[in-house]
Every structure is written in C-alpha cells, then in structure tokens.
Image 1 (cartoon, helix red, strand yellow):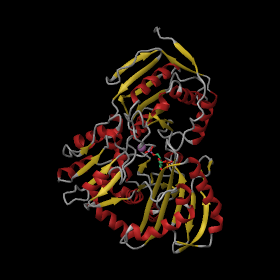
Image 2 (cartoon, rainbow, N blue to C red; image 1 turned 45 degrees about the vertical axis):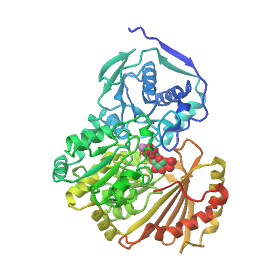
Image 3 (cartoon, helix red, strand yellow; image 1 turned 60 degrees about the vertical axis):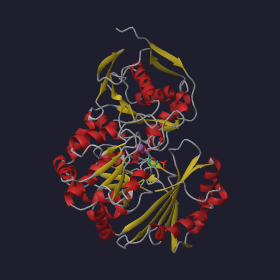
Image 4 (cartoon, helix red, strand yellow; image 1 turned 30 degrees about the horizontal axis):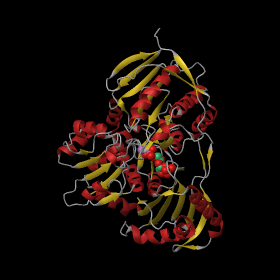
Length: 550
Ligand code: VG1
Ligand code: CO
C-alpha cells in the first residue's frame, strides 16, 4: 500500500457547465477557480460510472491537450482525481500533448474507456483567453448529447469530488508510475497517430512526390500539430525542413488566433498568392482537428475540399480503395459533397453542426468520409475531424492525378458545377440582442414562403431538426433555413463554442453549373443582402460588416 490517501472534498455546483457544440469552453480564469475543473471532471466520472457497475478498476482513461495555458496544471489535477476514482490505468501524452485526432486514435487503438481532451480548439489561448474540456467516449469520438446532458445534470447537483495528495508528475518523461492502485503512463503522443496514417496512406508514393520537388508549406499556427507535422511530413515523407512553420506548440499560440481561415492564417494566404508560392499551402488549428487547404492563388473552400476528397478517395488513397459506404456533412456545409455522393451511388447524410453527430453513422458503417464547413474534414479511421489527415489526402490526390491543386479543383467544378459558398461571422454580439434577432427571423419565416428572394423564390423555411438514424434521438433547433427554388440556401445559427457574448453565423450557398467561372461576390452578394434585410442586423445589433468571412 502507498501512503497516499483519498480525499473527499466538499464542493458546490457551477450553473454554467453545460457542454456546447464541443465540450465546455470558458475564459481560462473561470477554469482556474477552485473546484471548477474538479466539478466537471468528477461529473464526467459520475456520469460514466453508471455504465461501469464494477467501477473503473479495469478501465483506461486517456488525458491530453493542445498545450495551451493551464494545460499542465489541469492534467496534474485530472490524474490525481482519476487515481482517487480508481481507474486501472491513465495514459497521458508526453508534455501533456495530444492533438484531438491523436486522442481519438489512442482511445481506439488502446481500447480505452474514453478520454479527456483539454482544449478550446480554435479559440485563442492564454490566461486572459480561453480554455476548455471535453469527454470522448470509447469509440474515440466526442460524447453524444445523451452523455453530455447526463454530465451536465451531474454538474448541477455535485456536492463533493475525490482526489489524492500526490506531488506533480514529470510530464516530460515517458514511463510508468503508480498513484494508489492506478498505473499512470506517460507515453509518446505521436506514435499511435502516425501508425494510423501509415495504414491509410501510401507513404512511398508521397515520399516520391516530395523527392520530385513538390513543395508544401504547413502552418501549425503554434498549435498542437507542429510535432505531428514535423514527424510525418519532414521526417517520414522527406519534405525539406522548413516545410512546417510555427511548429512549436506555445501556451498562447504565439499571441495569434490558431484558427486556420482566410483571416487568421492571412500570412500563409498571402504567401500562396505570390509567384514563388509552394504547390500546396495548409494550416491547422490549436488542437489539430481543422484544416485549411490552399493551392497557388486559390483557397479551396472546406465544402469543396470535402467533395473533392470524397470524389478521389477510392482511386488515390489505399485506405479507401474499396470505396465509400457513404458521405456525411453538417447541415450548413455546402452541398458539393451531395453531388459527389450521388455520382458515387452512396448515401449522403445531413447532420447538425458538431462532430459528435457523425459518430453513430461511422460506428454503424454507414459513412466513411464526413466534413463541416468550419474547416473540418475526416473519416471513419478515427472519430474526430483530422487536420493532418486532410493534408495527406490532398498530397495523395496530387501524387496520383499528377495535377496541381488548382486543376483538381477546376476539374471538379467542370464535372459537378460549383457551390458558391461563404460564411459570415458576427462576433461579440450582445446575448439578448442576438437571441431576439434570431427569434425575429424565426417569426418571419413562414410568411416568406412564396416571396421573391435574391432573384429566386422562397420554397421552404424551417428550423433544422435531426433524427439520428441509428439511435432515434432527436436534436432540434439546429439552425434556421431559408431554402430557395433555385437550390440556394441561407442559414442562420448562433455559435455554441464562444466564451464572450454571442456569435451569429450566416451561411450562404448558391449553386451554379458554370464550371466555377463567376466570383463569390457576384453570385452571393444578392443573397447576403436579402438575408441581412430580413435579419435587420444593423438596426438590431448595430453591425455593418461581419468580423470574419470564410
Ligand atoms: C464551431 C463550428 C463547428 C465545429 C465546432 C468545433 O461550432 O461551426 O462546425 O464542429 O466549432 O470545432 P459553433 O457552434 O461555434 O458554430 V473545433 O475545431 O473548435 O473543436
Ligand atoms: Co479544433
């Protein structure tokens, strides 16, 4: 027996721990309050214990994060609590690091019960910025709403948590030690993930591509993917050193905003617009699950990227050589993938926003590739979206087709037509004003049916609701939709990942079978104008222009 003793500590509930689109995200200082993180972690343990009548003695918990400020103290705290709750084993990524896709891979490969991901993903990091935590279940994916709601109920009634007095572990040294009866293993956060990539992709072909002078620049934005990208692209595939930029994970992401889009990755975007631009530009976010894909002078929208990966997967990537079971996208994501699914003769699933909705479909073998407009693409190899995987997909398509990114995209538009697509984000809106604006739109919607709208007619309006085809659970209130007779869509929803004020997202899509020759502005301009008129944004929230357009 060791000398450590389990301590039971009295606590009282925090009312704001309901997980949003992807876990609980708050200002870091909120998480640093005594009891805040403890309450949430204990509530997760109490919620999942309902499925473990024999306790956690034979269960493994994985813990890791994106390296942002407070990552390490949070891990020390969780390890002590997991030991006090009697887990058989706790696996911790070395230096506290695990990208979100790597977490998913580790849970699956090591048959863990689940994992705690410490990240606020694309939100900025630092003591004055954001922190977050989410629980992933045994399939490696984010807990479904059934579980997150149960955790939330526990957070509302919690009265005590368990921990143990134990000195901090040296997180930088791989190895195993014991706390109480729990074996704590600090392990290499890259190996499992790299093994999954090697199973899917033809590394020899990709090596040849780089050997032939192909130039990639991968901007890790000082998030967690730096070490993964260094290893895979530079060490394993032989891309020259310097291919990965901003590759060291920093607690504040270097003061930047590790969100790979046209605004926050503008330096990379500018570089891709110069005559010396490399052949492929890519970036990923704080926790490594998002991706941005750029060709020379070309931004590949996430909706097009999803469609193009699905189109080429079977022919270009060994892991998908037997074809796709189906394709899934979140509702606001462009319908480009729908046309590819139809051409492949496979089903297309439309889910609410958030990766957790893809899990059941993939577990049931119904979909292979899925994606969201928010720079998230992935497949059934794990149960999270996967930034580095998306880059490997594009490298594979280039290697096999021997075509530059720009040509791959224009071929796609030639064959399928193009979904002109943009998302406008209005950040930091007053909570009340934003809610009223959405209510106001909802109230007007039935009356819009049949009326003229941006050169077409409103055919249908609704508030998107989803019935999971596997477990029958229903998720309603997932976004207001104005659907036009010409197939165009205007969608409005409030973000579920922000930590200050409200963020409204306005999604615009218009399809044209024009080989992609028009500009976004000419095709989407009238749609945006009409949408902003019915929203009455300026009068209600005093806003003219969106903060971010992607
Ligand atoms: C946003 C995106 C959503 C994504 C989520 C988590 O959610 O719109 O598609 O799944 O972020 O991504 P919301 O509710 O703010 O619109 V990540 O990379 O921050 O885990
Ligand atoms: Co992310």
